[in-house]
Image (cartoon, rainbow, N blue to C red; front, side, top):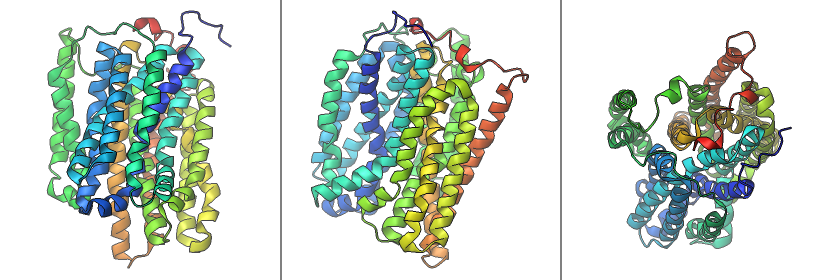
Length: 489
């Protein structure tokens, strides 16, 4: 057990809860809105393609902002950026709830996505700044639980709000952020530490433009997938890849000349565990993010469930994820990458079994039979997201923690965009080819998500094997972050 460190902020745990509440709201808004799209379409008298931008526009703006906002926080102060972004998020939530038409609603959601993308990297950076040693693992465990559970409970919370608020209930999906956000803002002013910025207040405008253009090119066809974007603007994929190659070369050039790159090249090449963790997260979120839309389509369109019942059907996964993530934060220092290997195996077995049961079991009993398998999958997921965040970011110097956290979450958002476009697309394709066999469609789509997780498992096993004693990288986890003390900020 570590002795108490008088240099640590005495309010660090209370400050952490403030940031987690804000982070939970921003991530919840990625999935909570999906169940309300039919109500929005009816209430605003608009088309399905237009109302889809309420979800996809938020996700796109969120992803585009992450790295740049993280770098701004590193340079100008994380507390300042966090509080300004949280205030903007509250205002945009109120504007979205009050929007009289689809145009203003989409505009408010785009601005809300920018605010959310500015909050997210400050969360992980503040953990780097405030905590050390085993405490950092526990704090990242809570952060990982927030990431995993917010995505899983979005359909449940959205369905509950719609059930309670009536025909115009979709507006309360946005209004509910206002009182919670204002409370977090007041507590943030009081509890978040005032620390001098770690940078010299300079940004990399060329890097910002190149990274933004590359991410936009990769995500836009996925965002427009329902309207045929994958076939109409497919050429944006290779174009985006070329722009990101140019971004990497530019960043290396800036670093060689002694400048301040947007994203330090050494994060991927010299920071132990960062490249592996970022790649694993992107692959995992392809399957993790996509299955929730598939489940919602199956339960609501296939079995006729209400949005609330559809959300409750996957609650065992959310419960398992929350419990496991909090515990995993305490185990990651001892088990390291092996914990994520076990977690990936559990989530693959859980979701794979769920897919088979939903395919083969009678409709009336399938959801009850699948509950234990979903619980197992949730327990596994809690042992993946939370420990992977810890192992990916624990060796990142505090001065670049915001940009590093933003890049990690950008990979997660890109993986999520692929999953939310590909898996529902496969679901509909299977329905068309099988004359509306919803059971086969859900099994094939969820099984494809499990296949993406198998790729993540391959990455995890290779990293675990390299870290085993005798393989040249046997540095125990608990000794590896001695150089990331908060004094570096």
